[in-house]
Amino acid sequence: MNLDSSFPGDIVTTNAAARAVRGVDELRAALASARREGRSIGLVPTMGFLHDGHLSLVRAARAECDVVVMSLFVNPTQFGPNEDLDRYPRDEERDLRLAGEAGVDVVFAPGVAELYPDGAATAVEVTGNLTSVLDGDPESRGAGHFRGVTTIVAKLFNIVGPDVAYFGQKDAQQAAVIKRMVRDLDFPVQVQVEPTVREADGLAMSSRNVYLEPADRARAVALSRALAACEQQAIARDSLEAGLDAARIELAAAAIEPEYLEARDAETLEPVEGLTGRPILVAVAAKVGGARLIDNVVIE
Ligand code: AMP
Image (cartoon, rainbow, N blue to C red; front, side, top):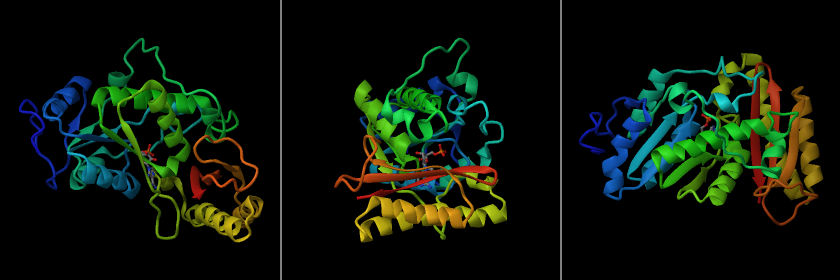
């Protein structure tokens, strides 16, 4: 697909590695003709080190949009001071190859200074319950994590101008926060959330799974097993508490102490007392060996 005559990387949907665009202006130039011609643009924001979860978002975008843009950016502002920013896995060459094979048209892979120029002093923040519970709890990653996420996603929306942006259900709270931001700030973008992609044994795919030593990799499957048990027991016994008990038992059997295991309204993240008739998000976070993992299930 010819994106713009002034854009040397043109074409795509070949199996060649995708070309990385580093600058905001260059990216806008690359997308100018597509935008002028009214072709739809899909955006898949990622921090790279791609796996099939990321590529499932690309497949959805490829099926629905004329032009697919992926961003690769390990966003420093969403990492806390004691988190894994420095050791976060990176392999841009491999990412560009996988993105190209999956049919990404343009990969936007800026340096930190391109997105956070000297003197940057603006942030976008969704306040309240959505960002203060679960991962936003001060005992967990804290609301600063989501401030970093919404700031970078708002910037990417402004830079790319996508019609549709694709996010994974794996990060359910992130998706809820971004939907809120889009509604509140009237971003002209449709937010699409795609199902969590899992390894054969159930472990949710994550770039951070590379941190797992073999013994911890075996234990890590307890997260998805706990959530499956939770859903199954909650429905079978018509009791959310019975579901959560079943989940706690699975985690304990793997010697996993969850950072949180909570049931909340899937849209508002307000606490729920029991099965409400509305979709309920059951979310878990736990440190397993060197990796902090999250996973969730929605009980419909
Ligand atoms: P990340 O690179 O971890 O920031 O993730 C980039 C996007 O991919 C986010 O929208 C994630 O929710 C999504 N994602 C990550 N892991 C998975 C997965 N296992 N299944 C589906 N989507 C995922």
